[in-house]
Image (cartoon, rainbow, N blue to C red; front, side):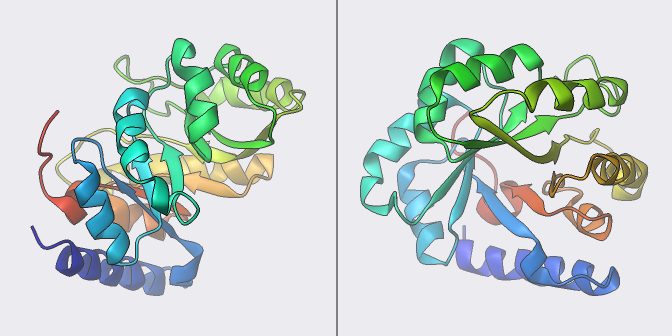
Length: 222
């Protein structure tokens, strides 16, 4: 595994996708998803210039954060996986932004546990897949209005996990619909695009990419 080489390749692909869509690469934040990798891998990625890291599980993340306390002021931690309500209190104390707020109930629980203004993204299940959490397109507007009443949360944008397909072009309409939905609400961020489809996501306006395998290879543990 050569993180530096992989990262250079990923950044070059992001830059080319930005060029094709008349965007600036600085408009896209690369979040390195480190689920399944230990703290030493995060440190190696940090040394290669990465500052945004995403974790899927609260308990796994806590172990790594404890080992990386000396880097805490320099790292932005993103919660990108499904957040169970009973883990919300721990999550809000340790993560800087939560991508996966998938219900108004979860938002209210998060709001109860944080005293700082916490940035969140609303997860949208555009393909209405039973295996994925999130608001449907029809639910988002009402959810935004309800969650905006919560004083400790700031809705920064929308997030989605596209269906797995062989050809990334097949998910372009999914990304486009999320961008159009984001624009209709007037939010800032779109968290969309992973290893298999991030170039299409950039072309469709993604501002946050969640990439693991293209940087780190296959997970060391599950």
